[in-house]
Image (cartoon, rainbow, N blue to C red; front, side):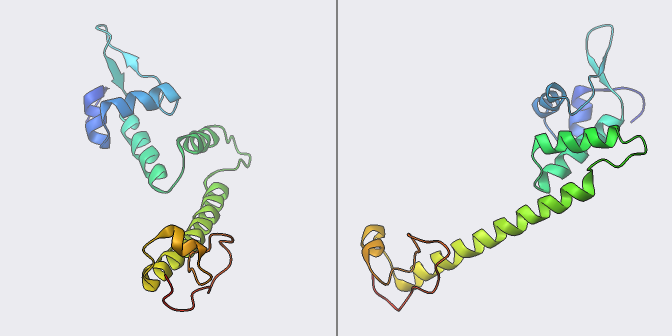
Length: 148
């Protein structure tokens, strides 16, 4: 790839569709491209890298708003400390850990419901030995054997 790239070339090289490329442009995640005399968008080669960075950040769990903030922080550092990837990655890691803990709780409750043979949610919920913690998700070990 050399020189300016057209929309389809950038999208293909970055592994996104054209609508995604244009959406990121409208959101300000990508710099507005130059235009040819015929009005076609002409992107610099670094647009491919920017798209790959955006998609990778999304796969790591960052929202597009967070990606925009990360990109903006990187553009405006000028030698001073700005909350960049390290701080935001640490915060995202804490979010992921919290989600994993929540999912582990959910998994434990669902596995207990399967093990207990629960087949009717209403009947199970009204049973004293219901393994699904309807009243308090933090309460565990309510399962006392098959009861539903």
